[in-house]
Length: 240
Image 1: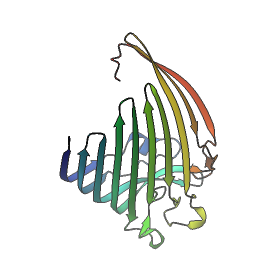
Image 2: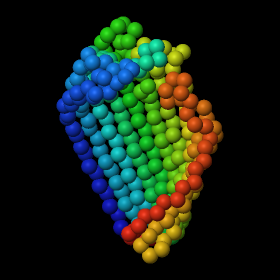
Image 3: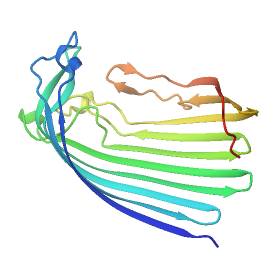
Image 4: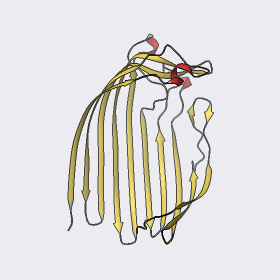
């Protein structure tokens, strides 16, 4: 019985400095020539665990982080024009978890993946209505789950993406917040081989339940949609 365990523990301390881009300062309209550089400190710790059996492979990766950013550059929509400004002090903290499991048999594989992110990006200084509030357009919770079935040269994928509510203003006005949403996508593909050339045919269905959602305020994203694609890879080494 082949069995393997591996655990890696990691830690990181980083200092960051970001100079405003040309777009930050001179984009027309909205550029702000007075925007100043960011200065940040970032701490992170995590672990990565894997376990391999005869037919199963498990993997879990987890991380927790914390950061402090002075003069963070944030773009805001002011009367229809996006413009950057500096937030004096922003505190970041969060958790990221990524887990996967793979079952392998002769001729087919089943793969499952799960990802979760928790993010708190809190403004610490400025007008009272902005203090201790989540930064705009940063969701607190993000989750993703997927399942895949591989058989011979066929592959079927099912993906679920979940995003929590997002504020669109620095004062976290709930009436202006974007609603949470969940999207379900599916795809089916097949590989064809001719000597060292691989041709892949793929069909996708996105936002299967036709959910209405916005990534930016008043900018609707696509509803249910479909696509068909064909890709060719030359000088390919076939893997079974």
